Picture (cartoon, rainbow, N blue to C red):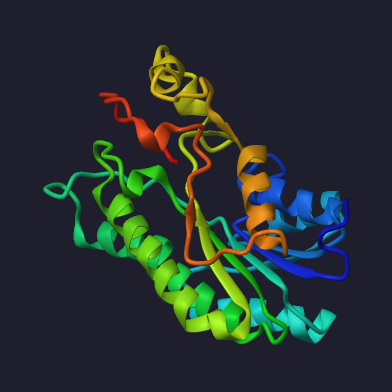
Length: 257
């Protein structure tokens, strides 16, 4: 299948082959796309780009000029931009009472302001229509302890997706989100190694297992394909966890979604 033949895609937040961004980039390439991978640290991006046969560039989602340059690269180098995926995330912990202003502003930069500017600049460079997808989290609607700024920013971006869908729809640009539950990846390996954590999460998931990065990639590719006639939606690729609850884990270890 080559659903993305002759298409150009950007995947931001792709720093490791086993990460969500890495899995999405690999699937896009497998289905015919030319892919630009980007992340904050160029060494990691370059390594991933080399292994996948992609093009790599450093980009910090919190710096608007770098987001503008990332979008412009697709045009100057390949003449078009069709798909843009934001996978940037950081587990920023703390209750409202204990969160300092600097931490709150970092959560907003990464999980709300950054996605806002990502959508802005990607859409500005999609002259033939296209698809923009940002990775959200089921914690935008389900409660989980000690992630107040993270969850609030994710919820804000979920509504931003709906706003952007209306603003850019007349240009043929779809804007959607994907919300996985706890996902097995290098980022969550330490948390999942703690005794009892995996079992506590799995018992809340109707389909009985944790998300994988390939689950997320499959959802992103479908939303980005011409098969998906929808925009402004949040696809909960969570095995049904969004219908139940998240377990209360009383640990200091971050649990990124």
